[in-house]
Amino acid sequence: MEKSSIQNIDMTYLRGIQEKLYTKIHVLYHNIEHIERALCYCIWILNLKVSKEELKNDFSDKDLNKIALLIETHAKSDDIVDFKNLKFKSSEKKNIRILSNI
Image (cartoon, rainbow, N blue to C red; front, side, top):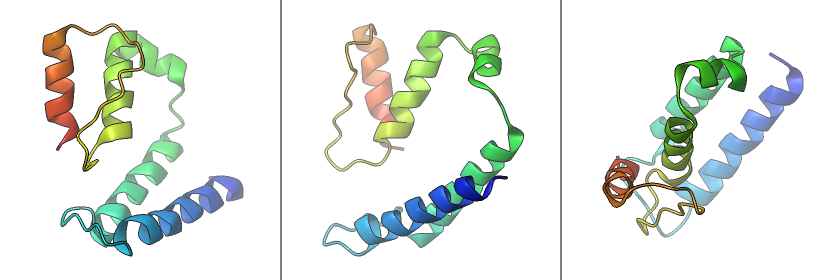
């Protein structure tokens, strides 16, 4: 893994600790262990060297958009999902909102 990738992960990790752990808003499952697990998964994914082109072979564009939305909005306290003018049926939006709380 490149040194710049490790530095970016490290900065994100530290920012996550400052913004999520040392604030007045505490979510029980968004603790140091959660951040460490997310960090390990990020490193694992980076080491896989999976290109976005390879993902497109396994997932539709719509599925990739759903995954991206879930990553962006997971565990947000306001339960608001910004669908960014992506075309989803109302039932799909409902499911994405439910999954974003996991």
